[in-house]
Length: 393
Image 1 (tube, rainbow, N blue to C red):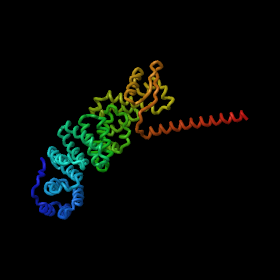
Image 2: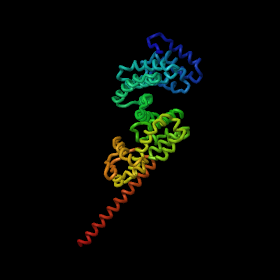
Image 3: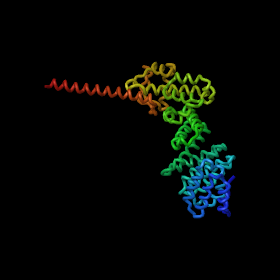
Image 4: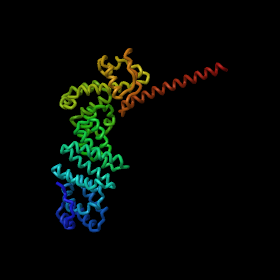
């Protein structure tokens, strides 16, 4: 369904007067204000009044009639970004997603060749893409996402509402494609563009659940400390899937025993995505355990890690240590060399990560140890200088 935007005679004043008496009492003052501002052609003030109307929690069922009988008459004089925001909210009132797509797409079409309204065009296009995804049009969705990403890169700045729409819909696209790393990054960017207070508890728990799964299943994702520190993850504490949050903590800290314990539970077995990926998850947690093991060591200790030490800490057979280290090197998780003769590994660098409190404590202890060694060295040099001075004298 599309809305007919051809120039027609509309009894705008009659519609507003009728709504003022027939609509729920809580909206009567809005319609009276609309009529007054419309008659005086105060378009900016009228736009603000419409925004206040839309913000009312019970205004949803009234939005489509308001557009068809009122806003369509002066929409060209309305701030176009505000118009798209209105259309976004109104599009949710249709029961059929194809009607929602037609309604919001018409706004995008009107803005396509208007350079001064690129931000509004991006918002309308991304909201239309949301309905394309619901219809299973992945190809059309990807084309729209790529187009809007290019526009956003060229804009000097945008409202957080536009960024939130772009990252939310992009995340939904990558979820549909089972592209876990891309979903993870876009979903986190979406959360950085919205206030958690604006999301329902159910939506927060669903987003946390999907982020946790993508962090675990994402190939190349070995640093999800940012998710662990995000307050949205705490919403899982009161849910039946709190075990998933605990599993993330096991990966981040290299807790192999904790991983084995959770992976044997019925809850884990009931999650086919994880259960069917157990070999991949096992290798991933071993790699993260190796990273944690390197991180905890001093610079000197990193340069002489034996195969036996690595085997013990990562719980892989000593004959598989070389393969594990080579995997970590190829992924860029660590840098170093393998001495096959002496069966040692010298690590010169480990991939930076967002640290939890325990890991920060480890870093603090290492800095304290380093500071103590520097102090001892300085004291030793001063003692040597003093001894030399006495000798010369």
